[in-house]
Length: 305
Image 1 (cartoon, rainbow, N blue to C red):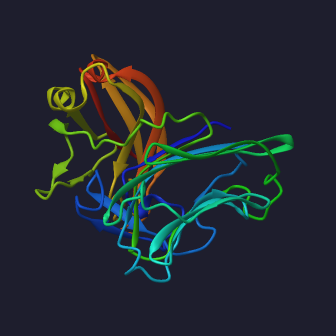
Image 2: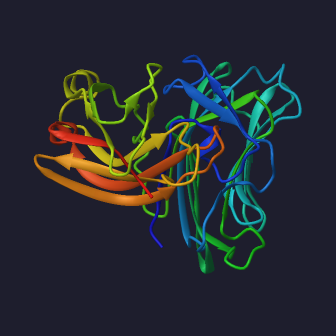
């Protein structure tokens, strides 16, 4: 399988409904973050990834005031990186078939009441070729390439755990894939320069489709992006998010992700939306281009049955 998952920090974009989204730029570079308290919940796939990369931000409150909280990111039953408070400090632990590492002294590279970055790579192996690689705030704290563990037959083999027990740890800026993620990659909320649509503008930032084939297309503010990140910066993935996105009756029931470049419109995945006003849709794909090459493209949705 090949997958890429991009989430700026919405709990609603997980495969479970138990999370809570929090807004605030002090907690996240994207302005949104979440906590999700259910064990072995996060993202569920139809197949088992044999290799898993993760990059995310975690806002860690003061560990002396944190209680009954832990963060776990992993795959299968017991293959994870865990962050939790211990004796007034943040402890970081790695586990596959057994404990890989356990670091108590983190004060010199883990920041409290601040956003921290975690990068994680795990690959199952039976012949001393399993990989467990962890980087926190650009410090490599584990790089084992001789592990023996196999999660393909685990109870939760097709589940990526995204766990934070409460708001003492808030998660955001998620990139997950079964292909390599550069530790420097990050999620960026694209500034919109212009919106073109034949849907009904509800006046509050939302739009309502009343007929099939109505479209909503948005143009990215390339000048603003280039000023902040540089026109030559690489774009490795694009995620379109409708939050909320729902249908009010039978008939129109789907949104198809589209991209328009010049006179050509390209369709991507079709998503059937729910009647729940809190439901969301997301379409993610891998790309390879620079910020400058995004110019002239429009991204959005087409309503359908």
